Image (cartoon, rainbow, N blue to C red; front, side):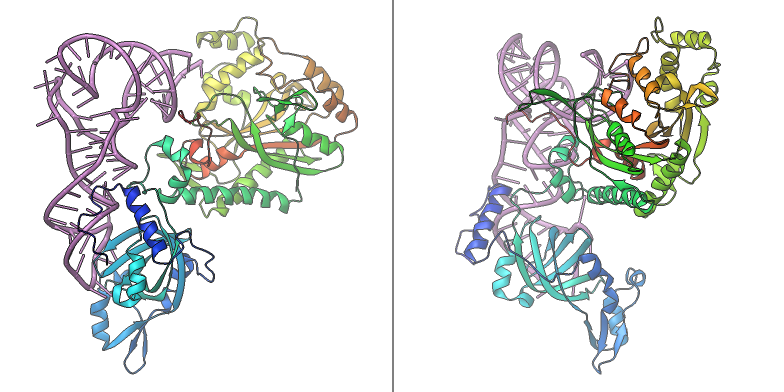
Length: 525
RNA sequence: GGGAUCGUAGCUCAGUCGGUAGAGCAACGGACUUUUAAUCCGUAGGUCCUGGGUUCGAGCCCCAGCGAUCCCA
């Protein structure tokens, strides 16, 4: 070692210490930023090879080790001495990962490394790796990325470990990691520095990997049923298809206002006019509204359209999408939700809007005067408002939050559904359902309105007491023209992917399942 | 938009009545070749979110701002 005085580095910050080691790594002739590292085995796969570790007696007899569960109670050292003289032998392996724990016993170090399939302990001895490699090992810090060549064996206590023959330096981490086993707790920092959250907080990476599996599963389910995925425009000249305030932007060359899309609906329906009989899009939509545990301004939406179907075919499809997604993450039909549970066994419960309204309010949904009185007792502004708008306010307040589900709420008041086909025998009721789970709206589906004249009329009708922002009815002449060219009768379905992921991963806030949720810009930057 | 709570070492958190800024982990020096959040001895480390105010004196009290979390609209 050097002849530096004992307290040479006293008082240096954790970061300065890491920079000093970085320089030392360079001085030792290594690249602190590493290079390609071929032929490694994922740690999960290495762990699966534990059974290949044998105890070999002096006469060459190979004996299987006791099961992992027995090793917890019986020290391996004691077991080995009962078998007779011999030594442990296992496969030669190469791994790479981040240093997540470090126990320094002087001339012997135990280093736990982690890749995205698991963790494993490294047994690193000065004598075993040689003087040159040992000097490099003195430059390791928590968070560094290293590679290792060695034999897979077990320690005396039975811990599966790679016994290092050579350590390769792959990348220095200059920022000190958060407290071990505690990680980052400040939700703001966890979101701003998602890389740290992912690298160090328990379960975060798995949750986002589950999100990917769910999204893949949704696509697989639809593709198995011959739906094709398309990519519609995200810049719209009319922000239609939903009731929401859009983000507004501007195209310079055309000198025109454009809106970030708030829904996928109207372009997918245009495609059905064009003969694309089963289409879907799974993509981002943008709504310029408040941020809450259930709302991020940009979020992922699935919309599916099936020619010659109706809203009941969409119920079956919804159940298939969700059941398959649960399987894809290896979960069971009964999932935890905070201190409650969700039972996703199919078929989901189905109840009509009016039925639920009556149950939860005790008011006859057909009696507009009674509903109005009830609403004003709840403190709603009722004067000059359309009866169905009033009813809808009450429904949101008294019914939605009380729904545990999963439950399909069916048959909505037609007047608040300007894009939905009416029931043949009752034009006041729309063939629509919404799926609710623990008060959250997860899916929304219609038998699609394909009558161009009625569509035009509904676009022209602004319900009393409903602002343009609250209405789905935004005149879109081109869409009406499309319908005049023949859109088949169809079922359409929208699923909020973020909410589905929340429910399946027991995440109470959308910010835990969106990698980079919108945050205010950091001050000082 | 309104209300409540919070912001202290790299991380997690204490901080009493307004009176010299604390711990654990991480870091640094030392001991240890079978440890499991290793252990033991020692050392260093602070823009107490920002700006004002009250006070002999403010991490603490008051005002404003910034940021966050939760609830409500």
